[in-house]
Amino acid sequence: MPRFKLYIEYEGTRYSGWQKQQNSRTVQGTLLKAADEIFGSGKADIQGSGRTDSGVHALCQVAHLEVKTMLAPEIMRLKFNDKLPHDINILEIEKTAPNFHARHDAVSRCYVYQISRRRTAFGKNYVWWIKDKLNFNKMQDAAKEFLGMHDFSSFAEEDKEEKSTKVLIEDITLKEDGELILIRITGSHFLWKMVRRMTGILAEIGRGKMSDNDLKLMLSRKTNSAAKYTAPPSGLFLERVLYKGDSPKKELTPVLPVSSFIGRSGHK
Image (cartoon, rainbow, N blue to C red):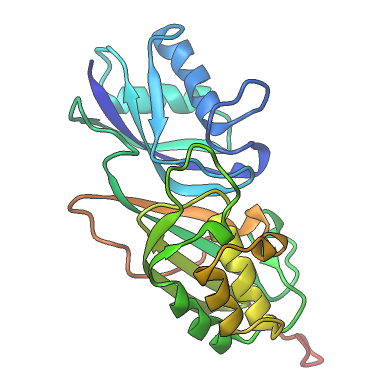
């Protein structure tokens, strides 16, 4: 059966995550519904590189489509986008090897989280607004503790489908951009709610309510304390899925810029 590689962007606010569910609107479920309309009921299968949580967005999710068709990839893309709602868009479709698997063949994933230091009229669905003052340097220093192979059971919701809670964090970068603090995390894979809890703990360290030692303790033994610091899904984006031969994206830029504003009074 022919396979095609799909590059997909979506705004996750209205969806209960990627994975198809019986009584919930999901991204995978919406794509499969569109596929049924294009190819016929049950004739196509779509599998993603991994699950994203409810409310989480994707700048470039990768999936494979398995379907017998004579349609050219570009025609398929146009047909899908005609059927899909405004908040899901297929960027590109290309033919791939019959044995290509979007999840199993992926070597790493990159997520970006956006924290806003000010309230924004435009970015509520795309940032986590934190009122408290954050010490960026402390957050940046603490983030280095995540690098390498660790047991992230303290940072994940229990998931029966996960065989191991060990994850290799290849890179973590923090950057200030206007009123945003951007956090990019690249890893072998990610557990349920893991990135949001990592971000939540870094925010607590930035607030001065936690230290590097608290983070080290969470990485050294299982504890449930990280759960209450789970960052909201609104600020989280699956940025990229990497396969053999792909190079990581170097530049870290905001999805939605939040600029500094200084009024006539001189106050932000």
